[in-house]
Each structure stands twice: as structure tokens, then as C-alpha cells.
Amino acid sequence: MKRPEDYTPGKRDNGHSPNTLRRRMLQMAALAPFASVLNAQSAAEAIAVQKLHTFGLRVSDVARSVAFYQQLFGMPISARVGDTVCLRIGSGPQFMSLRPLQPGETPGITHIGLSVRDFNAQSVAAQLQAHGFVNDASAANEADNLKRAMRYWPLNQQAVAFAGKEGLNFQLCDPAYCGSDNGQCSNIAAPNGAGLMVLNDINHFTNFMSHAPNTNQFYLNLFGLEYLAYQGPTSPTVGVGDGKQFLMFVGGAQEGAPTRPGRMDHVSMSVEGFDVEAIQAKLESVGITPRMDDNNTPALVHWISLRMPNRGGAEGGTPELYFSDPDSIHIQLQHLDYCGGGGYLGDACAPLA
Image 1 (cartoon, rainbow, N blue to C red):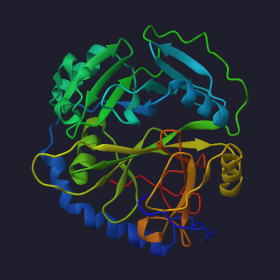
Image 2 (spheres, rainbow, N blue to C red):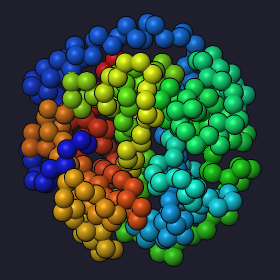
Image 3 (cartoon, rainbow, N blue to C red):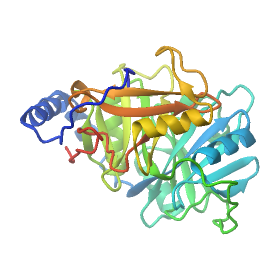
């Protein structure tokens, strides 16, 4: 996920070879110094998140982005809230929302949404308070994400928003949430065509943080989760839900107060019929061309990053397929069983405490 490389098919690894197991033991040992962070955290009750449920994009032209994603994936519109359009992912109610840029903003991912078992907005608010968050409705309009840190604010009866220690924006929602303020999404607007690929679900989010070890431990505690895999000695993935979804927090270990907010780098979604060359051909059929410069990612290009064994990938590399949308937002596409682990498909994972 950090260094793109040219794609060449590699030998498959089921993730259980002696070398792989030895590497995982070393990775666990490397993370041991951070275990003390867990003991220092609050013993407040963890919020029972179930799945990655939604995410938002801020885009320069909502109509153009809706047409783009519908052309690729045939996503129906599940809700409209003001200028925001919600597109259903898979069979729903999971969705992505597209909203127009506000003055001073740049395109990007706005938030990560997770469903909560037996969701109740008041109960979730109380749990956030127990973990040190402060109720602050004004945070919703705060342009500086760092100033939002450790604040929460209700969105509606089905969703509550909050910002973590480094200002990363999240939503906690009802498992039935489909994007509308009133909870009704029965009037789904069908796309013009079926799309070139079928989305199955949200797979993961990769986020760059000032202090990645502390961030990982913070969300393990907040949501009561476990590590699912390792993509390098100090780069664990935080498993969510069904053992395939995860959150990833990477970056440095800057001491003291963060000087800049966390950044959501990309979202990954699983697609049916994952085949690298076939997907590349489909992307190119709608004008998404191969990226020519690893250090420059303009809009509407695609590329492959090979995750090698030193980052938990297969011998020869686990191919990770990306493209950039009309606003240069990075989207990753993977196999239905991808969990960020070993093997050619990245599907060899086991919970690692």
C-alpha cells in the first residue's frame, strides 16, 4: 500500500508456511512495546461495532461523480439529503455519500462509518463520553479537523459523528442506516446501466497518522477489536466485522500533540470476479489509463502495488489494484476474500492479539 510496483504474477502462499509463521511471531514481538498503551487506556465499555458501513467523498461535481461511479459499478441512488447523494454499495444498506466541496476544501474522503449492534443514539453518546469525548454540536462546522478531536455530535436518530484524537472523522450508525435523515430509503433511483463491475462490500480504509501505534491501540480499545494481520513489523490491521474488513492506521510515532490531522488515504471495496487484467481492461474502456509516474497520480489513472513478503504479502507479491476518480481520490478494488493478509489474494488472515 506504500510503494507501487509493476505487476507480475507471483507464487501463491496460503499464509501458513514456516517462513510466514516465523515472520508473524517477529511482528508480534516488534509490537510488544506498545502493549503498555492498552493498560493505560480507560476501561470504559467498548462500542460494539459490527461492520464498515459507509463513507463519504467530497467532490468538485456531484453529478459527474455519480455518473462516474454508476458507470463503473451500477450503484443505485439510495437517498438524497440536500446536495448530498448516497449511492448503495452491493445489496445495501451500505452506501457511499457524495457531497459538493465547501469553500477552502479539497476533494477527499470525509469520514468512515461503522454500524453498531443494537444502535441507540443516546447510548452511543454516553459510551463516547465514557471514553473521553465531549458533546460539541459546533464541531460539525469546524474546518480544522484537529480542533474537532475528541468531540462528538449527533447527526440524526440513526447516526452519531465523532473525531478521534488526531481529528479523523467517523460515524457510528444503525445497521439499517441508508443515508436519509428519516431512515427511509425505499425510493431507490436505479442507474442507467448495470455497470462494468459488481461491488460486494466495503473492505478497508488506510489512514496516515502522526502516531500510528497509539492510534491503533485507541481504536482497539474504543471498539473492542483485535489485530487481523500485519503488513510489516509495525503495521497491523484492525479487524472489523466478518474477518475480512479492517481499519489500517500507518505513519510515524511523533511524540506530543499532533501537528496535523490524520489523513484518510484510500478506501478499498471488494468486487465480484476479481481478476487484475480483466479489471484493468474495464477501467481502460471508460478512459482510466495506466499511471505513468509512481510519484504523480492525476485523475483517472490505474495502477498496481505489489505487497511483498516484507509487508505480509505473498512470494512474488500480492497485487493490490487502485484507480483515481475524477477528483484524484484513490479507490482500491480487491477480491471478496481479501483481508489484508498473506497469499496471492491477500486472504490468509487470523486474529492476532
